[in-house]
Length: 246
Image (cartoon, rainbow, N blue to C red; front, side, top):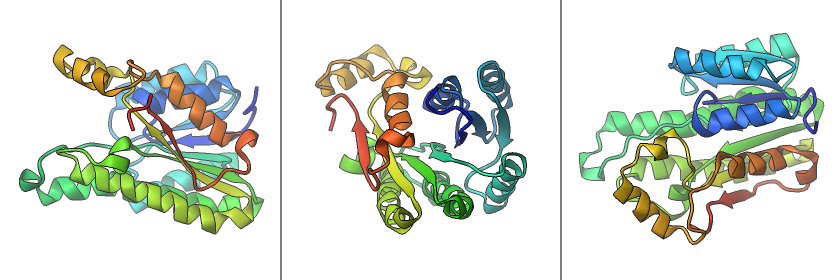
């Protein structure tokens, strides 16, 4: 198993892609810390699945936009595990509206969770990674960061910021043997896409050259690659996995 006894934190890990990534690491022998913010039911269900396959697991309730919550979460993990090998910054939200109707609260909340959360989690973990001269940070971004999207000025700004953050932090961390990369998923088959009406699904499918939505495994494969030794000379990169959506 490629990640046997590696210590991994995945934020926003109890649903959708986050859950898929946490399970993928667990199947490869990693110790998995599962972060979530509010849905206790989904969190407990995910924890039960992870416990069945991971050598070690932790369930971590924390709002990644809160410095206090993040520092408490990371210190708790380090107290039990001593160090962390891999951080996947996946937690994110959307509050889609045309800019003329987008209130400041929804702007701030999306920026705080998506971009500030990535900053806080990364900042809290890099000291221990620097001390070990080893680590992987993988940030989840979006095609909206690359092309923009109607009704997503806040979301596009947050995800675009993550790309710039990734490239800048990769330069700071390279000399310590720490890589920092991003994965940009396209439209993936998750419970969220299943809830779309048939007309919207068809419109999205027509935009994708490969003619299908991505599977969660398409994304977990990319994340595991960037977390592995196979990618040790890759840093500051944005790996787009979108079936050609572009």
